[in-house]
Image (cartoon, rainbow, N blue to C red; front, side):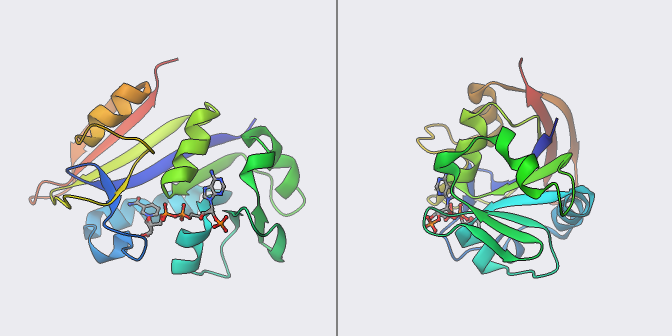
Length: 180
Ligand SMILES: NC(=O)c1ccc[n+]([C@@H]2O[C@H](COP(=O)([O-])OP(=O)(O)OC[C@H]3O[C@@H](n4cnc5c(N)ncnc54)[C@H](OP(=O)(O)O)[C@@H]3O)[C@@H](O)[C@H]2O)c1
């Protein structure tokens, strides 16, 4: 069975970006980026929305790209799928011939998070909280009412298993798992 890890960096007030054209490389700490690339390297496949994919094209990476308008293999290692007609259980068979999907990394954005959460397929969360406030932007989950990212995940049914400071500026790294 495939296991999916959600890796996400947020502002202290619970946003993953100010807007669609605001990638984490523009504001996340160097320490977060090290952990992020560690997760990417450890994954068999990363799963991401079309906007996130197009903002950082990497032809060398194995990617499953969500889109409602295109489907199929765009490169030998990159397949586009319409998530409205499938579930997370469908993904391994789709990519098996290229590389078995044992560890999938969920990169976002918001509606990719929603899809995995609604399908109860987020098995682990790697959350980094940067000491910045955006005031407005793209939330972790659609319809988010809380600001504190940790509380957002708690309210969604995840519990903390580990926490540490990544630097003197106050970047926090938290690991979480579903309650059940
Ligand atoms: N802070 C972080 O950890 C983090 C992580 C990831 C991304 N980001 C940032 O977030 C921003 C992009 O996020 P975003 O939310 O705008 O876009 P996104 O999720 O990257 O892309 C949205 C597009 O992907 C497709 N899609 C995604 N989920 C879908 C679903 N459940 N059902 C159907 N289609 C789905 C649709 O494509 P079609 O329009 O083709 O149908 C949708 O328009 C960028 O700034 C990116 O750098 C931050």
